[in-house]
Image (cartoon, rainbow, N blue to C red; front, top):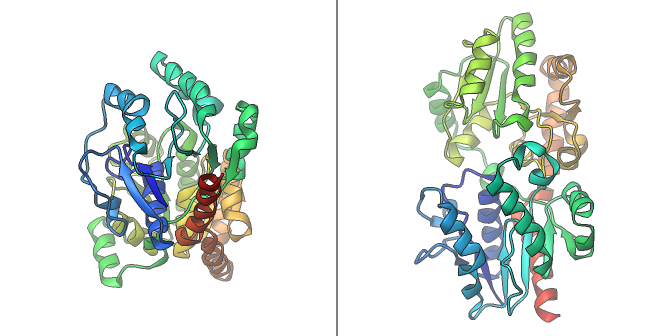
Length: 367
Protein backbone atom coordinates (compact mmCIF):
# COMPACT_ATOMS: atom_id res chain seq x y z
CA UNK A 1 0.00 0.00 0.00
CA UNK A 2 1.39 3.37 -1.08
CA UNK A 3 -0.14 6.57 0.26
CA UNK A 4 0.07 9.94 -1.48
CA UNK A 5 0.39 12.66 1.17
CA UNK A 6 -0.36 16.24 0.13
CA UNK A 7 2.68 18.21 1.34
CA UNK A 8 1.85 21.39 -0.56
CA UNK A 9 1.33 23.21 2.75
CA UNK A 10 4.88 22.52 3.94
CA UNK A 11 6.69 25.85 3.93
CA UNK A 12 8.81 26.32 7.06
CA UNK A 13 7.16 24.00 9.64
CA UNK A 14 5.89 26.78 11.87
CA UNK A 15 2.21 25.85 11.84
CA UNK A 16 0.42 23.08 13.66
CA UNK A 17 -0.79 21.60 10.36
CA UNK A 18 2.77 21.37 9.09
CA UNK A 19 3.93 19.71 12.30
CA UNK A 20 0.99 17.30 12.10
CA UNK A 21 1.96 16.34 8.54
CA UNK A 22 5.59 15.91 9.51
CA UNK A 23 4.73 13.74 12.51
CA UNK A 24 2.21 11.62 10.62
CA UNK A 25 4.67 10.85 7.83
CA UNK A 26 7.30 9.95 10.44
CA UNK A 27 4.85 7.62 12.19
CA UNK A 28 3.64 6.00 8.97
CA UNK A 29 7.23 5.29 8.03
CA UNK A 30 7.71 3.57 11.40
CA UNK A 31 4.74 1.24 10.82
CA UNK A 32 5.90 0.34 7.32
CA UNK A 33 3.62 2.42 5.10
CA UNK A 34 5.21 3.86 2.00
CA UNK A 35 4.37 7.55 1.64
CA UNK A 36 4.74 9.56 -1.54
CA UNK A 37 4.81 13.31 -1.01
CA UNK A 38 2.86 15.29 -3.60
CA UNK A 39 2.51 19.02 -4.02
CA UNK A 40 6.19 19.98 -3.76
CA UNK A 41 7.63 19.56 -7.23
CA UNK A 42 10.77 17.43 -7.44
CA UNK A 43 11.14 17.28 -3.65
CA UNK A 44 11.28 13.83 -2.08
CA UNK A 45 10.33 13.51 1.58
CA UNK A 46 12.73 12.24 4.22
CA UNK A 47 10.65 11.07 7.22
CA UNK A 48 13.53 11.22 9.72
CA UNK A 49 14.59 14.77 8.82
CA UNK A 50 13.18 17.96 10.29
CA UNK A 51 10.35 19.29 8.14
CA UNK A 52 10.63 16.04 6.13
CA UNK A 53 13.87 17.32 4.64
CA UNK A 54 11.98 19.91 2.57
CA UNK A 55 13.53 23.27 1.85
CA UNK A 56 11.83 26.29 3.40
CA UNK A 57 9.89 28.27 0.85
CA UNK A 58 7.83 31.48 0.74
CA UNK A 59 4.10 31.32 1.25
CA UNK A 60 2.30 30.23 -1.90
CA UNK A 61 0.36 32.79 -3.90
CA UNK A 62 -3.42 32.51 -3.92
CA UNK A 63 -3.23 31.35 -7.54
CA UNK A 64 -0.68 28.60 -6.76
CA UNK A 65 -2.78 27.42 -3.82
CA UNK A 66 -6.00 27.40 -5.86
CA UNK A 67 -4.40 25.60 -8.82
CA UNK A 68 -2.97 22.80 -6.69
CA UNK A 69 -6.08 22.21 -4.59
CA UNK A 70 -8.45 22.25 -7.55
CA UNK A 71 -6.40 20.88 -10.45
CA UNK A 72 -2.86 19.83 -9.59
CA UNK A 73 -3.77 17.30 -6.92
CA UNK A 74 -5.93 15.39 -9.40
CA UNK A 75 -2.75 13.99 -10.96
CA UNK A 76 -1.47 12.66 -7.61
CA UNK A 77 -3.46 9.41 -7.83
CA UNK A 78 -1.07 7.63 -10.19
CA UNK A 79 0.25 4.36 -8.74
CA UNK A 80 -1.05 5.03 -5.23
CA UNK A 81 -3.72 3.32 -3.13
CA UNK A 82 -5.07 6.41 -1.36
CA UNK A 83 -4.61 10.18 -1.14
CA UNK A 84 -4.41 11.91 2.24
CA UNK A 85 -5.01 15.67 2.36
CA UNK A 86 -3.87 16.82 5.82
CA UNK A 87 -5.91 20.03 5.83
CA UNK A 88 -9.56 20.90 5.26
CA UNK A 89 -9.89 21.08 1.48
CA UNK A 90 -10.90 18.45 -1.06
CA UNK A 91 -10.73 18.88 -4.84
CA UNK A 92 -14.03 19.67 -6.57
CA UNK A 93 -14.65 16.10 -7.69
CA UNK A 94 -14.12 12.54 -6.54
CA UNK A 95 -10.76 10.92 -7.23
CA UNK A 96 -10.28 7.43 -8.61
CA UNK A 97 -8.82 6.27 -5.27
CA UNK A 98 -10.10 6.83 -1.72
CA UNK A 99 -9.34 10.19 -0.13
CA UNK A 100 -8.83 11.12 3.52
CA UNK A 101 -9.14 14.73 4.65
CA UNK A 102 -7.95 15.87 8.10
CA UNK A 103 -9.99 18.56 9.85
CA UNK A 104 -7.98 20.23 12.59
CA UNK A 105 -10.55 22.78 13.69
CA UNK A 106 -13.47 24.82 12.46
CA UNK A 107 -12.11 28.22 13.40
CA UNK A 108 -13.33 29.85 10.16
CA UNK A 109 -16.88 28.71 10.86
CA UNK A 110 -16.93 28.98 14.65
CA UNK A 111 -15.28 32.42 14.95
CA UNK A 112 -16.65 35.35 12.94
CA UNK A 113 -13.35 37.25 12.93
CA UNK A 114 -11.69 34.61 10.74
CA UNK A 115 -13.92 34.86 7.68
CA UNK A 116 -14.54 38.55 7.23
CA UNK A 117 -12.81 39.09 3.88
CA UNK A 118 -14.43 38.16 0.59
CA UNK A 119 -11.69 35.74 -0.47
CA UNK A 120 -11.99 33.94 2.88
CA UNK A 121 -15.75 33.61 2.50
CA UNK A 122 -15.31 32.25 -1.03
CA UNK A 123 -12.67 29.74 0.10
CA UNK A 124 -14.69 28.47 3.04
CA UNK A 125 -17.80 28.16 0.91
CA UNK A 126 -15.74 25.96 -1.46
CA UNK A 127 -14.75 23.78 1.48
CA UNK A 128 -18.42 23.40 2.38
CA UNK A 129 -19.21 22.30 -1.19
CA UNK A 130 -16.24 20.01 -1.79
CA UNK A 131 -15.67 18.33 1.58
CA UNK A 132 -18.52 15.84 0.97
CA UNK A 133 -16.37 14.38 -1.85
CA UNK A 134 -13.93 12.97 0.71
CA UNK A 135 -14.12 9.24 1.28
CA UNK A 136 -13.26 9.70 4.96
CA UNK A 137 -12.73 12.66 7.28
CA UNK A 138 -10.40 12.55 10.27
CA UNK A 139 -11.08 14.88 13.21
CA UNK A 140 -8.09 15.33 15.51
CA UNK A 141 -10.26 15.55 18.65
CA UNK A 142 -13.74 14.82 19.89
CA UNK A 143 -14.18 18.58 20.13
CA UNK A 144 -13.50 18.98 16.42
CA UNK A 145 -15.85 16.09 15.70
CA UNK A 146 -18.62 17.91 17.56
CA UNK A 147 -17.92 21.05 15.56
CA UNK A 148 -18.13 19.08 12.32
CA UNK A 149 -21.44 17.60 13.46
CA UNK A 150 -22.69 21.15 14.17
CA UNK A 151 -21.63 22.75 10.89
CA UNK A 152 -21.64 19.74 8.54
CA UNK A 153 -24.19 17.35 10.10
CA UNK A 154 -24.52 15.42 6.84
CA UNK A 155 -20.84 14.44 7.11
CA UNK A 156 -20.81 13.20 10.72
CA UNK A 157 -21.02 9.55 9.68
CA UNK A 158 -17.87 9.96 7.57
CA UNK A 159 -15.77 11.15 10.50
CA UNK A 160 -13.19 9.11 12.41
CA UNK A 161 -11.55 10.68 15.46
CA UNK A 162 -7.79 10.13 15.65
CA UNK A 163 -5.87 12.36 18.04
CA UNK A 164 -3.04 14.60 16.95
CA UNK A 165 0.46 13.51 17.90
CA UNK A 166 3.58 14.96 19.48
CA UNK A 167 6.85 14.79 17.59
CA UNK A 168 9.35 12.35 19.16
CA UNK A 169 11.80 15.19 19.84
CA UNK A 170 9.53 16.38 22.65
CA UNK A 171 9.96 13.10 24.50
CA UNK A 172 13.74 13.53 24.70
CA UNK A 173 15.43 16.43 26.53
CA UNK A 174 18.33 18.21 24.89
CA UNK A 175 21.79 18.15 26.45
CA UNK A 176 22.02 20.32 29.55
CA UNK A 177 24.85 22.33 27.99
CA UNK A 178 22.70 23.10 24.96
CA UNK A 179 19.82 24.18 27.18
CA UNK A 180 22.06 26.43 29.23
CA UNK A 181 23.52 28.08 26.11
CA UNK A 182 20.00 28.72 24.86
CA UNK A 183 18.76 30.26 28.11
CA UNK A 184 21.89 32.39 28.37
CA UNK A 185 21.45 33.66 24.82
CA UNK A 186 18.04 35.10 25.76
CA UNK A 187 19.13 36.30 29.18
CA UNK A 188 16.87 33.94 31.10
CA UNK A 189 17.85 34.17 34.75
CA UNK A 190 14.74 34.61 36.89
CA UNK A 191 12.54 32.10 38.68
CA UNK A 192 9.84 30.96 38.45
CA UNK A 193 10.06 30.73 34.65
CA UNK A 194 6.75 30.56 32.84
CA UNK A 195 6.61 29.55 29.18
CA UNK A 196 4.08 30.16 26.42
CA UNK A 197 4.37 28.58 22.97
CA UNK A 198 1.73 29.27 20.34
CA UNK A 199 0.17 31.98 18.21
CA UNK A 200 -0.69 35.56 19.10
CA UNK A 201 -4.00 36.16 17.38
CA UNK A 202 -6.98 37.21 19.50
CA UNK A 203 -8.30 33.73 20.31
CA UNK A 204 -4.97 32.80 21.94
CA UNK A 205 -5.83 35.24 24.73
CA UNK A 206 -2.21 35.93 25.70
CA UNK A 207 -3.20 39.24 27.32
CA UNK A 208 -4.85 37.32 30.18
CA UNK A 209 -1.52 35.70 31.03
CA UNK A 210 0.25 39.06 30.87
CA UNK A 211 -2.25 40.51 33.36
CA UNK A 212 -1.83 37.52 35.65
CA UNK A 213 1.95 37.73 35.47
CA UNK A 214 1.87 41.41 36.35
CA UNK A 215 0.23 40.51 39.66
CA UNK A 216 2.33 37.41 40.32
CA UNK A 217 5.71 38.99 39.57
CA UNK A 218 4.83 42.10 41.57
CA UNK A 219 3.92 39.96 44.56
CA UNK A 220 6.98 37.68 44.29
CA UNK A 221 9.51 40.33 43.25
CA UNK A 222 10.88 37.71 40.87
CA UNK A 223 9.98 35.53 37.89
CA UNK A 224 9.83 35.77 34.11
CA UNK A 225 7.58 34.82 31.21
CA UNK A 226 8.99 33.56 27.91
CA UNK A 227 6.87 34.19 24.81
CA UNK A 228 8.14 32.06 21.94
CA UNK A 229 7.66 33.62 18.50
CA UNK A 230 6.41 36.99 19.77
CA UNK A 231 9.50 39.06 18.96
CA UNK A 232 7.84 40.92 16.08
CA UNK A 233 4.23 40.84 17.25
CA UNK A 234 3.53 44.50 17.86
CA UNK A 235 0.25 44.18 19.84
CA UNK A 236 1.93 41.88 22.35
CA UNK A 237 4.99 44.13 22.59
CA UNK A 238 2.73 47.10 23.30
CA UNK A 239 0.72 45.19 25.91
CA UNK A 240 3.89 44.21 27.78
CA UNK A 241 5.03 47.82 27.82
CA UNK A 242 1.65 49.10 29.00
CA UNK A 243 1.66 46.60 31.87
CA UNK A 244 5.21 47.55 32.89
CA UNK A 245 6.55 44.04 32.28
CA UNK A 246 9.49 44.90 30.04
CA UNK A 247 12.05 43.40 32.45
CA UNK A 248 9.93 40.29 33.11
CA UNK A 249 8.89 39.16 29.64
CA UNK A 250 11.34 37.65 27.16
CA UNK A 251 10.42 37.61 23.48
CA UNK A 252 11.95 35.17 21.05
CA UNK A 253 11.67 34.91 17.28
CA UNK A 254 10.33 31.73 15.70
CA UNK A 255 12.67 28.95 16.79
CA UNK A 256 13.81 25.59 15.53
CA UNK A 257 12.24 22.62 17.27
CA UNK A 258 15.36 21.66 19.22
CA UNK A 259 15.44 25.23 20.59
CA UNK A 260 11.78 25.03 21.61
CA UNK A 261 12.50 21.70 23.30
CA UNK A 262 15.29 23.40 25.23
CA UNK A 263 12.96 26.15 26.43
CA UNK A 264 10.34 23.63 27.56
CA UNK A 265 13.11 21.86 29.45
CA UNK A 266 14.17 25.11 31.12
CA UNK A 267 10.63 26.11 32.14
CA UNK A 268 9.04 25.70 35.55
CA UNK A 269 5.50 25.98 34.24
CA UNK A 270 3.69 26.06 30.90
CA UNK A 271 0.68 28.35 30.48
CA UNK A 272 -1.86 28.25 27.66
CA UNK A 273 -4.89 30.57 27.96
CA UNK A 274 -6.40 29.92 24.50
CA UNK A 275 -10.16 30.41 24.04
CA UNK A 276 -10.61 28.01 21.11
CA UNK A 277 -8.55 25.12 19.71
CA UNK A 278 -9.08 22.05 17.61
CA UNK A 279 -6.58 20.11 19.70
CA UNK A 280 -4.01 22.00 21.77
CA UNK A 281 -0.61 20.86 20.51
CA UNK A 282 1.66 23.03 22.72
CA UNK A 283 0.09 21.70 25.95
CA UNK A 284 0.62 18.16 24.64
CA UNK A 285 4.27 19.00 23.93
CA UNK A 286 4.69 20.39 27.44
CA UNK A 287 3.18 17.22 28.91
CA UNK A 288 5.68 15.14 26.95
CA UNK A 289 8.52 17.30 28.28
CA UNK A 290 7.34 16.86 31.86
CA UNK A 291 6.47 20.53 32.37
CA UNK A 292 3.45 21.25 34.61
CA UNK A 293 0.61 22.62 32.46
CA UNK A 294 -2.02 25.21 33.32
CA UNK A 295 -4.40 25.81 30.44
CA UNK A 296 -7.70 27.39 29.55
CA UNK A 297 -10.67 25.17 30.32
CA UNK A 298 -11.99 24.73 26.79
CA UNK A 299 -13.20 21.45 25.23
CA UNK A 300 -10.26 20.53 22.98
CA UNK A 301 -7.54 21.45 25.47
CA UNK A 302 -9.30 19.69 28.34
CA UNK A 303 -9.35 16.59 26.13
CA UNK A 304 -5.59 16.79 25.77
CA UNK A 305 -4.66 17.73 29.33
CA UNK A 306 -7.26 15.73 31.25
CA UNK A 307 -6.33 15.42 34.92
CA UNK A 308 -2.60 15.67 34.20
CA UNK A 309 -2.72 19.48 34.37
CA UNK A 310 -4.87 22.25 35.81
CA UNK A 311 -7.64 23.93 33.82
CA UNK A 312 -8.67 27.52 34.39
CA UNK A 313 -11.40 29.76 33.00
CA UNK A 314 -9.65 31.53 30.10
CA UNK A 315 -10.65 35.09 31.08
CA UNK A 316 -10.53 34.91 34.87
CA UNK A 317 -7.25 36.67 35.65
CA UNK A 318 -7.56 36.16 39.42
CA UNK A 319 -8.08 32.41 38.92
CA UNK A 320 -4.93 32.31 36.78
CA UNK A 321 -3.00 34.16 39.49
CA UNK A 322 -4.24 31.81 42.19
CA UNK A 323 -3.57 28.63 40.18
CA UNK A 324 -0.11 29.63 38.97
CA UNK A 325 0.86 30.72 42.48
CA UNK A 326 -0.36 27.44 43.95
CA UNK A 327 1.76 25.35 41.59
CA UNK A 328 4.82 27.54 42.09
CA UNK A 329 4.52 27.38 45.87
CA UNK A 330 3.79 23.65 46.02
CA UNK A 331 6.74 21.66 44.58
CA UNK A 332 5.05 18.33 45.34
CA UNK A 333 2.06 19.37 43.22
CA UNK A 334 4.34 20.46 40.35
CA UNK A 335 6.17 17.12 40.48
CA UNK A 336 2.90 15.20 40.49
CA UNK A 337 1.67 17.17 37.47
CA UNK A 338 4.94 16.54 35.63
CA UNK A 339 4.75 12.78 36.20
CA UNK A 340 1.11 12.61 35.17
CA UNK A 341 1.90 14.70 32.11
CA UNK A 342 4.59 12.34 30.86
CA UNK A 343 2.25 9.37 31.26
CA UNK A 344 -0.59 11.21 29.50
CA UNK A 345 1.67 12.21 26.60
CA UNK A 346 2.21 8.57 25.66
CA UNK A 347 -1.29 8.70 24.16
CA UNK A 348 0.11 11.17 21.63
CA UNK A 349 3.04 9.02 20.46
CA UNK A 350 3.06 9.30 16.66
CA UNK A 351 3.97 5.68 16.11
CA UNK A 352 0.89 4.52 18.03
CA UNK A 353 -1.29 7.05 16.26
CA UNK A 354 0.08 5.98 12.87
CA UNK A 355 -1.16 2.47 13.59
CA UNK A 356 -4.67 3.88 13.81
CA UNK A 357 -4.20 5.53 10.41
CA UNK A 358 -2.85 2.27 9.04
CA UNK A 359 -6.06 0.49 10.07
CA UNK A 360 -8.15 3.27 8.54
CA UNK A 361 -6.24 3.21 5.24
CA UNK A 362 -6.50 -0.56 4.97
CA UNK A 363 -10.24 -0.45 5.56
CA UNK A 364 -10.75 2.22 2.90
CA UNK A 365 -8.52 0.52 0.34
CA UNK A 366 -10.22 -2.83 0.99
CA UNK A 367 -13.68 -1.30 0.75
